[in-house]
Length: 116
Figure 1: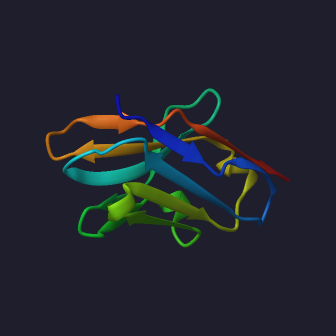
Figure 2 (figure 1 turned 60 degrees about the vertical axis):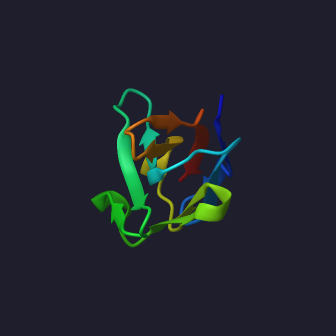
Figure 3 (figure 1 turned 90 degrees about the vertical axis):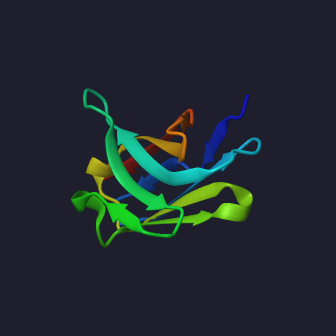
């Protein structure tokens, strides 16, 4: 069973940066899109950023200009560079891979905590 493994979360002060990574433990064929979601305590999971196989990107308004999503297709890996972090960015961040067959793979989540 292929799993997505996230890394790079942690504790950072407001204004700081973190880089999240998410890699598949095995081969996943026909990945259409990769994305990052987040879920804060008491809130629903929300889309942060997504990147299609052709490189087209989409960002939630609350991270535009601060976060950058990128992918390495050869390594089946997606990254999220997070700059100018705010306390309200505190959440568990999840990666998701979607195949052309509409199958979704989710990571286990990585905690990001931004202190004020």
